[in-house]
Amino acid sequence: MTTTHDSTPEREWWRSAVFYQIYPRSFQDSNGDGIGDIPGIISRLDVLRDLGVGAIWLSPVYPSPQADNGYDIANYRDIDPTMGTLDDFDNLVAEAKQRGIRIIMDMVLNHSSDEHPWFQASRRREEPYTDYYIWQPAAPDGGPPNNWTSFFMGTVWEWDEVRGEYYLHLFDRKQPDLNYSNPAVVAEMKDVVRFWLERGVAGFRFDVINVLSKQSYADGRPTLVIRGNEHYNTTEGTHEFLRQLRAEVMEPYGAFSVGETVFITPEEAQNLTNKARGELDTVFYFDHLEVDRVIARYVPRGFSAHRLLKRLTAWQERLEWNAIALENHDQPRIVSHYGDDGVYRERSAKLIATWLLTMKGTPFIYQGQEIGMTNFDMTGLDQLNDVESHNIDALMQRFRFPGSLRWYITRQASRDNARTPVQWTSEPGAGFTDGQPWLPINANAETINFASQVEVPDSVWSYYRDLITFRAASPTLLRGTFTPLFSDKTLMAYRRSPAPDEPEADETYTIVLNFCGYSRRLSPWLHADSEAERPRIVWSNIGRAGVLPDKLEPWEAIILGMPKEA
Picture (spheres, rainbow, N blue to C red):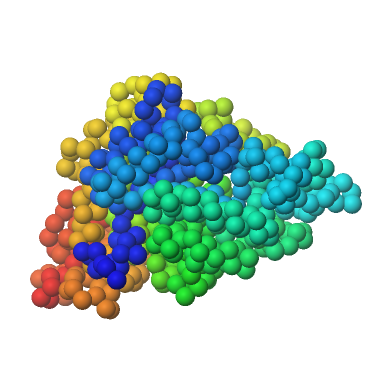
Protein backbone atom coordinates (compact mmCIF):
# COMPACT_ATOMS: atom_id res chain seq x y z
CA MET A 1 0.00 0.00 0.00
CA THR A 2 1.33 3.44 -0.90
CA THR A 3 1.57 6.10 1.78
CA THR A 4 1.71 9.89 1.88
CA HIS A 5 4.63 11.89 3.25
CA ASP A 6 3.05 11.92 6.71
CA SER A 7 2.74 8.12 6.95
CA THR A 8 -1.05 8.17 6.58
CA PRO A 9 -2.21 5.29 4.35
CA GLU A 10 -3.39 6.71 1.02
CA ARG A 11 -6.87 5.20 1.46
CA GLU A 12 -7.10 7.17 4.70
CA TRP A 13 -5.86 10.53 3.38
CA TRP A 14 -8.75 12.17 5.21
CA ARG A 15 -7.17 11.56 8.61
CA SER A 16 -4.49 14.20 8.01
CA ALA A 17 -6.52 16.57 5.82
CA VAL A 18 -8.28 19.75 6.91
CA PHE A 19 -11.76 19.97 5.36
CA TYR A 20 -13.59 23.16 4.44
CA GLN A 21 -17.37 23.20 4.09
CA ILE A 22 -18.82 25.35 1.33
CA TYR A 23 -22.48 26.32 1.45
CA PRO A 24 -22.68 27.28 -2.23
CA ARG A 25 -25.59 29.76 -2.07
CA SER A 26 -23.57 31.95 0.28
CA PHE A 27 -19.97 31.43 -0.79
CA GLN A 28 -19.32 33.39 -4.00
CA ASP A 29 -21.67 34.69 -6.70
CA SER A 30 -20.11 34.95 -10.18
CA ASN A 31 -23.00 36.29 -12.27
CA GLY A 32 -24.71 38.96 -10.16
CA ASP A 33 -27.92 37.06 -9.39
CA GLY A 34 -27.23 37.18 -5.65
CA ILE A 35 -26.80 33.41 -5.33
CA GLY A 36 -23.44 31.72 -4.97
CA ASP A 37 -22.46 29.26 -7.69
CA ILE A 38 -19.84 26.79 -8.86
CA PRO A 39 -17.85 29.25 -11.03
CA GLY A 40 -17.68 31.46 -7.94
CA ILE A 41 -16.22 28.59 -5.94
CA ILE A 42 -13.60 27.98 -8.63
CA SER A 43 -12.56 31.64 -8.42
CA ARG A 44 -11.71 31.21 -4.72
CA LEU A 45 -9.81 27.92 -4.85
CA ASP A 46 -6.43 29.62 -4.52
CA VAL A 47 -7.57 31.15 -1.23
CA LEU A 48 -8.47 27.71 0.14
CA ARG A 49 -5.18 26.24 -1.05
CA ASP A 50 -3.29 29.05 0.70
CA LEU A 51 -5.24 28.42 3.89
CA GLY A 52 -4.09 24.79 3.88
CA VAL A 53 -7.36 23.11 2.94
CA GLY A 54 -7.03 19.53 1.67
CA ALA A 55 -10.67 18.79 0.89
CA ILE A 56 -13.92 20.64 0.28
CA TRP A 57 -17.28 19.42 1.55
CA LEU A 58 -19.71 20.84 -0.98
CA SER A 59 -23.27 21.30 0.27
CA PRO A 60 -25.99 20.36 -2.25
CA VAL A 61 -25.78 21.80 -5.77
CA TYR A 62 -28.42 19.52 -7.33
CA PRO A 63 -31.61 20.78 -9.03
CA SER A 64 -34.02 21.73 -6.26
CA PRO A 65 -37.11 23.87 -5.62
CA GLN A 66 -35.17 25.12 -2.56
CA ALA A 67 -37.80 24.36 0.08
CA ASP A 68 -34.84 23.49 2.32
CA ASN A 69 -32.05 25.23 0.39
CA GLY A 70 -31.01 22.28 -1.76
CA TYR A 71 -31.55 19.49 0.74
CA ASP A 72 -34.76 18.78 -1.18
CA ILE A 73 -33.33 17.23 -4.35
CA ALA A 74 -35.39 17.09 -7.55
CA ASN A 75 -32.71 15.40 -9.69
CA TYR A 76 -29.81 13.45 -8.22
CA ARG A 77 -27.76 13.43 -11.43
CA ASP A 78 -27.53 17.08 -12.44
CA ILE A 79 -26.62 20.58 -11.25
CA ASP A 80 -29.14 23.28 -10.38
CA PRO A 81 -29.12 25.99 -13.08
CA THR A 82 -28.57 28.68 -10.42
CA MET A 83 -25.34 26.89 -9.46
CA GLY A 84 -24.00 26.18 -12.95
CA THR A 85 -23.77 23.08 -15.13
CA LEU A 86 -22.28 19.61 -15.03
CA ASP A 87 -19.39 21.00 -17.08
CA ASP A 88 -18.84 23.62 -14.37
CA PHE A 89 -18.85 20.87 -11.77
CA ASP A 90 -16.33 18.79 -13.72
CA ASN A 91 -14.17 21.91 -14.01
CA LEU A 92 -14.38 22.43 -10.25
CA VAL A 93 -13.17 18.88 -9.57
CA ALA A 94 -10.29 19.33 -12.06
CA GLU A 95 -9.25 22.78 -10.82
CA ALA A 96 -9.37 21.65 -7.19
CA LYS A 97 -7.27 18.61 -8.00
CA GLN A 98 -4.61 20.84 -9.57
CA ARG A 99 -4.34 22.59 -6.21
CA GLY A 100 -4.19 19.38 -4.19
CA ILE A 101 -7.80 19.71 -3.01
CA ARG A 102 -10.34 16.91 -3.11
CA ILE A 103 -14.11 17.37 -3.41
CA ILE A 104 -16.66 15.47 -1.33
CA MET A 105 -20.34 15.97 -2.09
CA ASP A 106 -23.30 16.33 0.22
CA MET A 107 -25.65 13.45 -0.55
CA VAL A 108 -29.22 13.29 0.78
CA LEU A 109 -30.26 9.65 0.72
CA ASN A 110 -33.13 9.75 3.19
CA HIS A 111 -35.52 11.94 1.20
CA SER A 112 -36.00 13.74 -2.09
CA SER A 113 -38.08 16.72 -3.12
CA ASP A 114 -41.78 16.14 -3.63
CA GLU A 115 -41.15 17.66 -7.08
CA HIS A 116 -38.81 14.81 -8.04
CA PRO A 117 -40.25 12.79 -10.96
CA TRP A 118 -40.01 9.66 -8.79
CA PHE A 119 -42.43 11.10 -6.24
CA GLN A 120 -44.80 12.46 -8.85
CA ALA A 121 -44.95 8.98 -10.44
CA SER A 122 -45.30 7.31 -7.03
CA ARG A 123 -48.31 9.38 -6.03
CA ARG A 124 -49.96 8.28 -9.31
CA ARG A 125 -49.00 4.64 -8.60
CA GLU A 126 -46.91 4.43 -11.78
CA GLU A 127 -44.52 1.50 -11.85
CA PRO A 128 -41.76 1.01 -10.97
CA TYR A 129 -42.13 4.00 -8.63
CA THR A 130 -45.31 3.06 -6.73
CA ASP A 131 -43.38 2.04 -3.61
CA TYR A 132 -40.36 4.36 -3.92
CA TYR A 133 -41.70 6.34 -0.95
CA ILE A 134 -43.36 5.49 2.35
CA TRP A 135 -47.13 5.51 1.95
CA GLN A 136 -49.65 4.50 4.59
CA PRO A 137 -53.46 4.50 4.67
CA ALA A 138 -55.27 6.76 7.10
CA ALA A 139 -55.96 5.54 10.62
CA PRO A 140 -59.49 4.27 11.33
CA ASP A 141 -60.49 7.79 12.44
CA GLY A 142 -59.18 9.22 9.15
CA GLY A 143 -56.15 10.82 10.77
CA PRO A 144 -52.41 10.15 10.37
CA PRO A 145 -51.16 6.55 10.70
CA ASN A 146 -49.24 7.25 13.93
CA ASN A 147 -48.20 10.04 16.30
CA TRP A 148 -44.67 10.62 15.03
CA THR A 149 -43.42 14.20 14.89
CA SER A 150 -41.12 15.86 12.37
CA PHE A 151 -37.65 17.28 12.95
CA PHE A 152 -39.16 20.51 11.61
CA MET A 153 -42.09 20.26 14.08
CA GLY A 154 -45.61 18.92 13.52
CA THR A 155 -46.65 15.54 12.15
CA VAL A 156 -44.46 13.50 9.81
CA TRP A 157 -47.50 12.59 7.70
CA GLU A 158 -48.97 14.52 4.78
CA TRP A 159 -52.20 13.54 3.05
CA ASP A 160 -51.96 13.25 -0.73
CA GLU A 161 -55.24 13.64 -2.60
CA VAL A 162 -53.91 12.04 -5.79
CA ARG A 163 -52.80 8.81 -4.13
CA GLY A 164 -55.42 8.83 -1.39
CA GLU A 165 -52.84 7.99 1.29
CA TYR A 166 -50.44 9.65 3.67
CA TYR A 167 -46.71 9.91 2.88
CA LEU A 168 -44.00 10.14 5.52
CA HIS A 169 -41.57 13.06 5.79
CA LEU A 170 -39.21 13.20 8.77
CA PHE A 171 -38.35 16.76 7.72
CA ASP A 172 -40.33 19.29 5.68
CA ARG A 173 -43.55 18.19 3.97
CA LYS A 174 -41.81 18.86 0.65
CA GLN A 175 -39.15 16.26 1.55
CA PRO A 176 -40.84 12.82 1.35
CA ASP A 177 -38.79 9.93 2.74
CA LEU A 178 -37.59 7.26 0.34
CA ASN A 179 -38.52 3.64 1.05
CA TYR A 180 -35.42 1.56 1.88
CA SER A 181 -37.56 -1.55 2.22
CA ASN A 182 -37.82 -1.46 -1.57
CA PRO A 183 -34.80 -3.13 -3.29
CA ALA A 184 -35.32 -0.86 -6.31
CA VAL A 185 -34.71 2.22 -4.13
CA VAL A 186 -31.59 0.66 -2.66
CA ALA A 187 -30.25 -0.07 -6.15
CA GLU A 188 -31.21 3.40 -7.39
CA MET A 189 -29.38 5.21 -4.62
CA LYS A 190 -26.26 3.09 -5.03
CA ASP A 191 -26.26 4.09 -8.68
CA VAL A 192 -26.63 7.77 -7.75
CA VAL A 193 -23.53 7.55 -5.54
CA ARG A 194 -21.65 5.75 -8.30
CA PHE A 195 -22.59 8.47 -10.80
CA TRP A 196 -20.71 11.14 -8.85
CA LEU A 197 -17.75 8.92 -8.03
CA GLU A 198 -17.35 8.41 -11.77
CA ARG A 199 -17.11 12.21 -12.09
CA GLY A 200 -14.14 12.26 -9.75
CA VAL A 201 -15.45 13.12 -6.31
CA ALA A 202 -13.44 11.72 -3.41
CA GLY A 203 -16.37 10.82 -1.20
CA PHE A 204 -19.53 12.04 0.49
CA ARG A 205 -21.01 13.67 3.51
CA PHE A 206 -24.21 11.66 3.93
CA ASP A 207 -27.07 13.75 5.30
CA VAL A 208 -29.02 12.38 8.32
CA ILE A 209 -27.65 8.96 7.41
CA ASN A 210 -28.73 7.04 10.51
CA VAL A 211 -32.50 7.39 9.92
CA LEU A 212 -32.86 5.70 6.51
CA SER A 213 -34.58 2.44 7.43
CA LYS A 214 -37.87 2.49 9.35
CA GLN A 215 -38.37 -0.77 11.25
CA SER A 216 -42.03 -0.21 12.18
CA TYR A 217 -44.81 2.39 12.12
CA ALA A 218 -46.07 1.97 15.68
CA ASP A 219 -46.76 5.05 17.78
CA GLY A 220 -43.71 6.71 19.28
CA ARG A 221 -43.16 7.07 23.00
CA PRO A 222 -43.83 10.48 24.61
CA THR A 223 -40.89 12.87 24.40
CA LEU A 224 -40.15 16.58 24.68
CA VAL A 225 -38.60 16.72 21.22
CA ILE A 226 -39.31 14.06 18.57
CA ARG A 227 -41.84 11.21 18.81
CA GLY A 228 -41.19 8.00 16.87
CA ASN A 229 -37.41 8.28 16.81
CA GLU A 230 -36.97 4.85 18.40
CA HIS A 231 -38.51 3.20 15.32
CA TYR A 232 -36.00 4.53 12.78
CA ASN A 233 -32.88 5.72 14.58
CA THR A 234 -29.83 3.62 13.55
CA THR A 235 -31.75 0.45 12.75
CA GLU A 236 -30.28 -2.77 11.41
CA GLY A 237 -31.76 -1.96 8.00
CA THR A 238 -29.65 1.19 7.86
CA HIS A 239 -26.53 -0.74 8.89
CA GLU A 240 -27.16 -3.30 6.15
CA PHE A 241 -27.59 -0.64 3.48
CA LEU A 242 -24.37 1.09 4.52
CA ARG A 243 -22.45 -2.18 4.44
CA GLN A 244 -23.68 -2.84 0.92
CA LEU A 245 -22.93 0.71 -0.20
CA ARG A 246 -19.41 0.53 1.17
CA ALA A 247 -18.58 -2.88 -0.30
CA GLU A 248 -20.22 -2.50 -3.70
CA VAL A 249 -19.78 1.20 -4.47
CA MET A 250 -17.50 3.17 -2.14
CA GLU A 251 -14.63 0.72 -1.67
CA PRO A 252 -13.86 0.17 -5.37
CA TYR A 253 -13.25 3.92 -5.66
CA GLY A 254 -11.41 4.27 -2.36
CA ALA A 255 -14.07 6.82 -1.41
CA PHE A 256 -14.36 8.59 1.94
CA SER A 257 -17.61 8.81 3.91
CA VAL A 258 -18.68 10.96 6.83
CA GLY A 259 -22.23 10.59 8.07
CA GLU A 260 -24.33 13.27 9.69
CA THR A 261 -26.11 11.55 12.56
CA VAL A 262 -29.00 12.62 14.78
CA PHE A 263 -29.81 11.56 18.36
CA ILE A 264 -26.85 9.19 18.33
CA THR A 265 -24.79 7.82 21.21
CA PRO A 266 -21.07 7.05 21.10
CA GLU A 267 -21.91 3.34 21.24
CA GLU A 268 -24.15 3.60 18.17
CA ALA A 269 -21.48 5.65 16.41
CA GLN A 270 -18.96 2.91 17.16
CA ASN A 271 -21.09 0.46 15.22
CA LEU A 272 -21.38 2.83 12.27
CA THR A 273 -17.61 3.45 12.09
CA ASN A 274 -16.10 0.15 13.21
CA LYS A 275 -13.70 -0.84 10.43
CA ALA A 276 -14.60 -4.49 10.73
CA ARG A 277 -18.26 -3.70 10.01
CA GLY A 278 -17.43 -1.75 6.83
CA GLU A 279 -20.01 1.06 6.96
CA LEU A 280 -18.78 4.66 7.40
CA ASP A 281 -15.34 6.16 7.94
CA THR A 282 -16.49 8.65 10.55
CA VAL A 283 -19.56 10.57 11.71
CA PHE A 284 -20.66 14.04 12.75
CA TYR A 285 -22.30 14.39 16.16
CA PHE A 286 -23.52 17.52 17.91
CA ASP A 287 -23.82 17.12 21.66
CA HIS A 288 -20.54 19.02 22.22
CA LEU A 289 -22.35 22.03 20.70
CA GLU A 290 -25.28 21.69 23.09
CA VAL A 291 -23.62 21.94 26.51
CA ASP A 292 -25.37 25.29 26.97
CA ARG A 293 -28.71 23.99 25.68
CA VAL A 294 -31.40 21.86 27.31
CA ILE A 295 -33.24 20.82 24.14
CA ALA A 296 -31.17 20.91 20.95
CA ARG A 297 -30.44 24.54 20.06
CA TYR A 298 -33.60 26.14 21.38
CA VAL A 299 -33.65 26.14 25.20
CA PRO A 300 -30.50 27.76 26.65
CA ARG A 301 -28.64 27.20 29.89
CA GLY A 302 -25.28 28.38 31.19
CA PHE A 303 -22.01 27.40 29.52
CA SER A 304 -19.68 25.00 31.34
CA ALA A 305 -16.20 24.11 30.14
CA HIS A 306 -16.35 21.12 32.48
CA ARG A 307 -19.47 19.80 30.77
CA LEU A 308 -17.90 20.49 27.37
CA LEU A 309 -14.72 18.53 28.12
CA LYS A 310 -16.74 15.65 29.55
CA ARG A 311 -18.75 15.35 26.34
CA LEU A 312 -15.71 15.71 24.11
CA THR A 313 -13.91 13.03 26.10
CA ALA A 314 -16.79 10.57 25.71
CA TRP A 315 -16.42 10.75 21.93
CA GLN A 316 -12.62 10.98 21.88
CA GLU A 317 -12.27 7.85 24.02
CA ARG A 318 -15.04 5.71 22.54
CA LEU A 319 -14.47 6.35 18.84
CA GLU A 320 -11.30 5.31 17.07
CA TRP A 321 -11.51 8.51 14.99
CA ASN A 322 -13.60 11.67 15.19
CA ALA A 323 -14.90 14.24 12.72
CA ILE A 324 -14.38 17.55 14.52
CA ALA A 325 -16.77 20.36 13.54
CA LEU A 326 -17.78 23.44 15.54
CA GLU A 327 -19.82 25.13 12.83
CA ASN A 328 -21.86 24.08 9.82
CA HIS A 329 -24.83 25.31 7.80
CA ASP A 330 -27.23 24.19 10.58
CA GLN A 331 -25.43 25.68 13.59
CA PRO A 332 -25.00 29.24 14.89
CA ARG A 333 -21.59 30.84 14.43
CA ILE A 334 -19.27 29.40 17.07
CA VAL A 335 -17.69 32.76 17.99
CA SER A 336 -21.21 34.03 18.81
CA HIS A 337 -22.07 30.78 20.59
CA TYR A 338 -19.11 29.70 22.74
CA GLY A 339 -16.91 32.73 22.09
CA ASP A 340 -17.26 36.50 22.51
CA ASP A 341 -18.41 38.29 19.35
CA GLY A 342 -17.85 41.69 20.96
CA VAL A 343 -14.66 43.04 22.55
CA TYR A 344 -12.80 39.71 22.40
CA ARG A 345 -14.06 38.49 19.01
CA GLU A 346 -10.62 38.03 17.43
CA ARG A 347 -9.06 36.47 20.51
CA SER A 348 -11.95 34.08 21.12
CA ALA A 349 -12.04 33.16 17.41
CA LYS A 350 -8.37 32.18 17.70
CA LEU A 351 -9.08 30.19 20.88
CA ILE A 352 -11.76 28.30 18.95
CA ALA A 353 -9.29 27.64 16.12
CA THR A 354 -6.83 26.26 18.68
CA TRP A 355 -9.50 23.95 20.07
CA LEU A 356 -10.63 22.73 16.63
CA LEU A 357 -7.14 22.05 15.29
CA THR A 358 -5.70 20.31 18.36
CA MET A 359 -8.37 17.67 18.96
CA LYS A 360 -7.86 14.08 17.82
CA GLY A 361 -9.67 13.67 14.51
CA THR A 362 -10.32 15.33 11.17
CA PRO A 363 -11.13 19.05 11.51
CA PHE A 364 -13.89 20.66 9.43
CA ILE A 365 -13.86 24.44 8.99
CA TYR A 366 -17.10 26.09 7.89
CA GLN A 367 -16.92 28.98 5.43
CA GLY A 368 -16.35 32.28 7.22
CA GLN A 369 -15.23 30.61 10.43
CA GLU A 370 -11.63 31.30 9.42
CA ILE A 371 -12.24 35.07 9.52
CA GLY A 372 -14.34 35.00 12.69
CA MET A 373 -17.76 35.68 11.17
CA THR A 374 -20.57 36.24 13.66
CA ASN A 375 -24.29 35.50 13.87
CA PHE A 376 -26.63 37.54 11.70
CA ASP A 377 -27.82 41.04 12.56
CA MET A 378 -31.30 40.69 11.05
CA THR A 379 -34.09 42.21 13.10
CA GLY A 380 -37.20 40.15 12.34
CA LEU A 381 -38.56 36.82 11.19
CA ASP A 382 -39.61 38.26 7.84
CA GLN A 383 -35.93 38.57 6.89
CA LEU A 384 -35.22 34.88 7.51
CA ASN A 385 -35.26 32.21 4.82
CA ASP A 386 -34.83 29.12 7.01
CA VAL A 387 -37.89 26.85 6.99
CA GLU A 388 -36.99 25.45 10.41
CA SER A 389 -36.96 28.93 11.97
CA HIS A 390 -40.41 29.71 10.62
CA ASN A 391 -41.76 26.35 11.85
CA ILE A 392 -40.29 26.85 15.32
CA ASP A 393 -41.80 30.32 15.52
CA ALA A 394 -45.21 28.93 14.51
CA LEU A 395 -44.93 26.27 17.22
CA MET A 396 -44.04 28.87 19.85
CA GLN A 397 -47.00 30.98 18.76
CA ARG A 398 -49.31 28.02 19.40
CA PHE A 399 -47.95 27.87 22.94
CA ARG A 400 -48.52 31.63 23.26
CA PHE A 401 -44.88 32.64 23.64
CA PRO A 402 -44.68 36.46 23.47
CA GLY A 403 -43.18 37.86 20.27
CA SER A 404 -40.03 39.23 21.94
CA LEU A 405 -39.22 35.83 23.48
CA ARG A 406 -39.91 34.01 20.20
CA TRP A 407 -37.51 36.29 18.36
CA TYR A 408 -34.85 36.03 21.09
CA ILE A 409 -34.88 32.22 20.84
CA THR A 410 -34.98 32.21 17.03
CA ARG A 411 -32.23 34.83 16.72
CA GLN A 412 -29.86 32.77 18.85
CA ALA A 413 -30.58 29.39 17.25
CA SER A 414 -31.62 29.99 13.63
CA ARG A 415 -29.75 28.14 10.92
CA ASP A 416 -29.61 31.39 8.95
CA ASN A 417 -26.92 32.58 11.38
CA ALA A 418 -24.47 30.44 9.42
CA ARG A 419 -25.98 31.14 6.00
CA THR A 420 -25.37 34.85 5.54
CA PRO A 421 -23.00 35.45 2.61
CA VAL A 422 -19.26 35.15 3.14
CA GLN A 423 -17.69 38.52 3.84
CA TRP A 424 -14.84 38.85 1.34
CA THR A 425 -14.41 42.64 1.30
CA SER A 426 -15.75 45.82 2.91
CA GLU A 427 -17.37 46.93 -0.36
CA PRO A 428 -21.13 46.89 -1.00
CA GLY A 429 -22.12 43.26 -1.53
CA ALA A 430 -19.11 42.27 0.62
CA GLY A 431 -17.31 40.93 -2.46
CA PHE A 432 -19.90 38.15 -2.54
CA THR A 433 -22.16 39.62 -5.22
CA ASP A 434 -22.74 42.62 -7.47
CA GLY A 435 -26.50 42.05 -7.17
CA GLN A 436 -29.07 41.68 -4.44
CA PRO A 437 -27.91 38.88 -2.11
CA TRP A 438 -30.40 36.08 -1.46
CA LEU A 439 -29.93 36.59 2.31
CA PRO A 440 -28.90 39.89 3.95
CA ILE A 441 -25.18 40.49 4.48
CA ASN A 442 -24.05 41.31 8.00
CA ALA A 443 -23.31 45.01 8.51
CA ASN A 444 -20.04 44.09 10.21
CA ALA A 445 -18.68 43.00 6.81
CA GLU A 446 -17.18 46.50 6.76
CA THR A 447 -14.71 45.42 9.43
CA ILE A 448 -14.85 41.59 9.43
CA ASN A 449 -13.78 40.42 5.99
CA PHE A 450 -11.18 38.34 4.21
CA ALA A 451 -9.46 41.24 2.41
CA SER A 452 -8.67 43.00 5.69
CA GLN A 453 -7.06 39.86 7.15
CA VAL A 454 -5.22 37.96 4.43
CA GLU A 455 -2.05 40.08 4.57
CA VAL A 456 -2.13 40.72 8.32
CA PRO A 457 0.17 38.36 10.28
CA ASP A 458 -1.88 38.38 13.50
CA SER A 459 -5.36 38.21 11.92
CA VAL A 460 -7.82 35.39 12.54
CA TRP A 461 -7.32 34.12 8.97
CA SER A 462 -3.53 34.06 9.35
CA TYR A 463 -3.89 32.29 12.69
CA TYR A 464 -5.94 29.51 11.09
CA ARG A 465 -3.43 29.19 8.24
CA ASP A 466 -0.42 29.04 10.56
CA LEU A 467 -2.02 26.58 12.96
CA ILE A 468 -3.06 24.33 10.06
CA THR A 469 0.58 24.31 8.99
CA PHE A 470 1.71 23.54 12.55
CA ARG A 471 -0.74 20.65 12.81
CA ALA A 472 0.35 19.20 9.46
CA ALA A 473 3.95 19.00 10.68
CA SER A 474 3.10 17.32 14.02
CA PRO A 475 2.65 13.54 14.20
CA THR A 476 1.26 14.05 17.69
CA LEU A 477 -1.51 16.40 16.58
CA LEU A 478 -2.24 14.30 13.49
CA ARG A 479 -2.35 10.88 15.10
CA GLY A 480 -1.58 11.12 18.80
CA THR A 481 -3.71 10.14 21.77
CA PHE A 482 -6.09 12.40 23.70
CA THR A 483 -6.24 12.71 27.50
CA PRO A 484 -8.51 15.09 29.45
CA LEU A 485 -6.63 16.91 32.20
CA PHE A 486 -8.70 19.56 33.93
CA SER A 487 -11.89 21.58 33.56
CA ASP A 488 -14.16 23.86 35.55
CA LYS A 489 -16.71 26.52 34.65
CA THR A 490 -14.49 28.34 32.13
CA LEU A 491 -11.13 26.56 31.96
CA MET A 492 -10.40 23.42 29.92
CA ALA A 493 -7.15 21.50 29.47
CA TYR A 494 -6.25 18.29 27.63
CA ARG A 495 -3.13 16.53 26.44
CA ARG A 496 -2.09 15.16 23.07
CA SER A 497 0.64 12.50 23.29
CA PRO A 498 2.48 10.61 20.54
CA ALA A 499 0.67 7.52 19.30
CA PRO A 500 2.06 4.30 20.81
CA ASP A 501 3.20 3.02 17.42
CA GLU A 502 4.41 6.37 16.09
CA PRO A 503 7.88 5.84 14.63
CA GLU A 504 8.83 9.54 14.68
CA ALA A 505 9.78 11.29 17.88
CA ASP A 506 7.47 14.19 18.68
CA GLU A 507 6.49 16.28 21.64
CA THR A 508 3.62 15.82 24.03
CA TYR A 509 1.39 18.89 23.99
CA THR A 510 -0.89 20.30 26.67
CA ILE A 511 -3.64 22.59 25.41
CA VAL A 512 -5.19 25.05 27.87
CA LEU A 513 -8.22 27.19 26.91
CA ASN A 514 -9.81 30.01 28.93
CA PHE A 515 -13.45 30.41 27.81
CA CYS A 516 -14.16 33.69 29.57
CA GLY A 517 -13.53 37.43 29.53
CA TYR A 518 -11.44 37.57 32.70
CA SER A 519 -8.04 36.24 33.76
CA ARG A 520 -7.79 32.79 35.28
CA ARG A 521 -5.06 31.60 37.62
CA LEU A 522 -3.74 28.24 36.49
CA SER A 523 -4.03 25.20 38.69
CA PRO A 524 -0.88 24.12 40.56
CA TRP A 525 -0.77 20.74 38.80
CA LEU A 526 0.39 22.48 35.60
CA HIS A 527 3.47 23.91 37.28
CA ALA A 528 6.71 22.10 37.98
CA ASP A 529 8.68 22.52 41.22
CA SER A 530 11.17 24.80 39.51
CA GLU A 531 10.66 27.34 36.76
CA ALA A 532 13.35 25.66 34.66
CA GLU A 533 11.23 22.51 34.49
CA ARG A 534 8.04 24.27 33.51
CA PRO A 535 6.68 23.38 30.06
CA ARG A 536 7.27 26.08 27.49
CA ILE A 537 4.63 27.80 25.40
CA VAL A 538 4.94 26.61 21.81
CA TRP A 539 1.75 28.33 20.63
CA SER A 540 -0.39 31.19 21.91
CA ASN A 541 -3.30 33.18 20.56
CA ILE A 542 -1.98 36.40 22.14
CA GLY A 543 1.64 36.08 21.00
CA ARG A 544 2.95 34.90 24.37
CA ALA A 545 6.16 32.85 24.50
CA GLY A 546 8.42 31.34 27.15
CA VAL A 547 7.61 29.31 30.24
CA LEU A 548 4.13 28.63 31.57
CA PRO A 549 2.62 31.75 33.19
CA ASP A 550 0.83 31.83 36.52
CA LYS A 551 -2.44 32.86 34.88
CA LEU A 552 -4.16 33.04 31.52
CA GLU A 553 -5.49 36.27 30.07
CA PRO A 554 -9.16 36.59 28.98
CA TRP A 555 -9.91 34.18 26.11
CA GLU A 556 -6.30 33.05 26.02
CA ALA A 557 -5.35 29.73 24.43
CA ILE A 558 -1.92 28.16 24.79
CA ILE A 559 -0.22 25.00 23.62
CA LEU A 560 2.48 23.79 25.99
CA GLY A 561 5.34 21.45 25.18
CA MET A 562 8.36 20.09 26.98
CA PRO A 563 11.80 20.15 25.37
CA LYS A 564 12.52 16.74 23.84
CA GLU A 565 15.57 16.24 26.01
CA ALA A 566 13.56 16.82 29.20
